[in-house]
Image 1: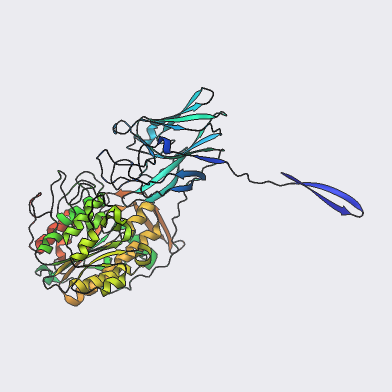
Image 2: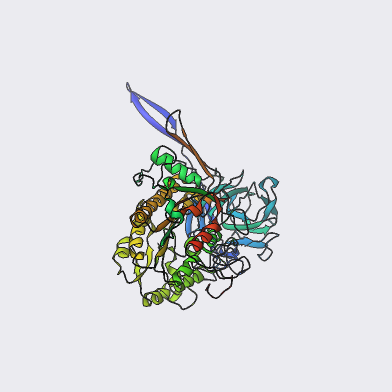
Length: 601
């Protein structure tokens, strides 16, 4: 663009031209995907061949909201799910998932543009270096011609559970879906200067999920930026003098047991938190307890566990497959020591900053083939009749039917059922603290007002300890800090540190209680490591913190385990996560029934 200016000097008129460079706005037209859609973003039941997305239950794409979004600088329209039969995406099966369709056709309404953009991903993929063909896009033009674009894994598309970008697959959208850090990729393909009649998609070597498509000008794709920075100032519990090892603990039986779980809180998260907050290693309260050991976490189906299999292991004392809750690999029901202790008259409490139907708390009461079967998990929770059940608001819909603005497909009103049995529903810490002591408590608390504070879980723990200790037979309390896992999945160091500091505040509350009463065993561990986090504090310049995440997934790295109180000697050395349940059952003289026994609901 050029602009002409005039200026008069000494009676003469001068003209001059200035070139003004304007950044042109790229023209992008989203294509309605609904005419070709054959699946949904959400899936309730894993492996039933009836659900949506990749048929993996709650490990789905339901966190992707409807509407117009910008990904990698490209505008896309995301369809909304307005009914159970509403289709929102294209899912095409590969050789191992033949029950998915292999083809889809999307009319293009005679649009003409230089480029086609796909927001998509793949699953069950071959090695990236092989660059096998995930699928083919056939572009049918109005002039009767057809062009092909081969979409290769490792070049044009990425695995939805991995963070790896490739030459023509820019990682453009990512979030944690409650199970996995998931990603979508934007790819660009050249088009002929002809109006398009239709786009035909055909799968080959992998399952191929197409979320949105657009056409438009050629645009340089912008990947998600990684921000491995820490700026937030945290309030950590003050240091305390390490409780000494008490030889008498070897002969005493704990009346109460507190199990603190940092979801995904591996050794790297603990080290990072100590270095960032205290400028030295080994300064967290948990690290100064008299017993410190390591715990292996593999599941029955994989070297790398998920939270459901891990929770089943340290609640029921048996390995199971990833995704299974409170059942064996051959689907026989297991009893947890929390259930057995409750049936003997002890009080039981579960607190988490995640949903109370999330995999970690559910391992203590649920018996489901899929951790994503939230309706069944919620029913199991109501049947447990545990004394304190507190989580966030993410799963409250599973406690009411659809006609009452819930998500249940049956007519059960679990909230009404539970209040009729004597539960008080709390929506904040104050409501929990003020609930009558003779009532059980069910809590659904907003994540950010309640759980985004460092001391939040520690304060809830103090309230729970006061309530549960009214039971003369003793109690079991599990408290989960969910944020270390979210930090690992998202490669967000501030979230990793926040979650670990929250766990340390829980330790502060629990150890203070244990020291006052002398009859309480406190255990701190993780269900698995997430993110492959490593870090170091430099000497030149001093206090220069460097860190690196190796993945956005879980790893098989052993996790730390710390213990204090009667029976803590049973948790020393290298142990397995099933040994936690075995040791607790031994301390309380509980006998696990055989798998499938009616005692396990």
